[in-house]
Image (cartoon, rainbow, N blue to C red):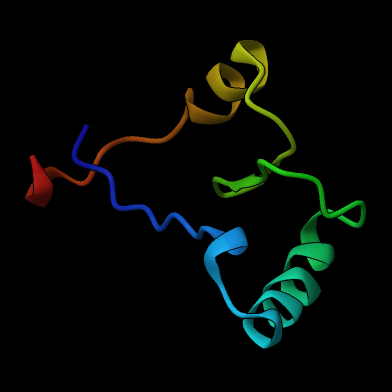
Length: 65
């Protein structure tokens, strides 16, 4: 789709890195549940309805197509 993203595998990080990521995650999702996606807003799960609603207004970067 030509959109940039960053995936973070928290379970593969060492304990210090995990602590930092979870601290940041809790700013957006206080329950720190996985998966959590930040798409110009917080999406707390992979439910199709939530993803479609969140992605509806995002347009791909024309330079990456």
